[in-house]
View 1: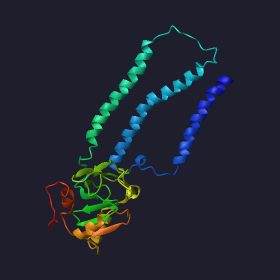
View 2 (view 1 turned 135 degrees about the vertical axis):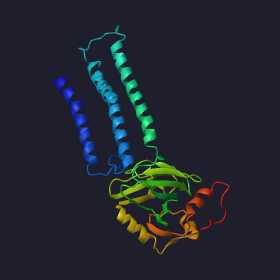
View 3 (view 1 turned 45 degrees about the horizontal axis):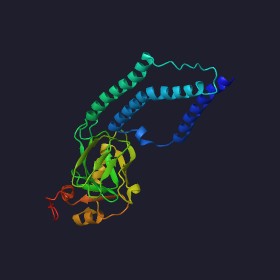
View 4 (view 1 turned 90 degrees about the vertical axis):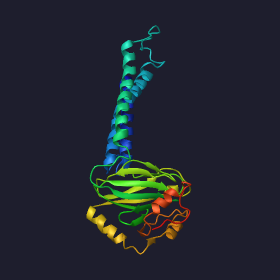
Length: 292
């Protein structure tokens, strides 16, 4: 009877922990585990594959840990005491061979996905939408050079169309991340990082900075609105008629530190605004305002 109890209790505890986890996450939104973008879907598959391979080691190890702790405890007089036992080549080959095999597989997969999921690699699906991203304190500015508009804390993009982001920072270093869509890439002053993403589902998704950069860090989020192509075109046409113009003066005011989550749309008054922001930290660039 005691043996049955000792066997059942660990199983009950394990099932209880699984049930508790399922209860806590039920109905919750976990963007990393609920991808809506091409890149994020591949990343989730990679994560699940790595988790499966790791479980081939972790589950047996912790199962044996519990088994040995119970079977060879000091109070168990039935356990065979074999002080002369030293080795077993088959067992040693097993517990060395499996981790080596898993690490080898993960190494190959990591090498392949480092290239296939390279943030700089263009995605298939036609001509990409160009979006220039500027990280400020503590807000996000998005510039659409082809549509000649800009937005604050709001990123409208079309569904099933590649989006090419070029990112910089006019503030401390930031990390641009939309968990539902894919990769995190850093935005740094004086540099222009790149990222390619493609949304596969219409909806609204939250973007974040994942780099602690000051008092407004926790509120430095933005809304990504994925819409159909006709809706995006209509939005761009309406945005181009916005009464607010993003002039150099308006930009300098906007760049002042403020934890402001206000969403705003501008007409882009200067096509070289992003170039000016990027080059102003290069030591060789514009001290005055760029020409329109």
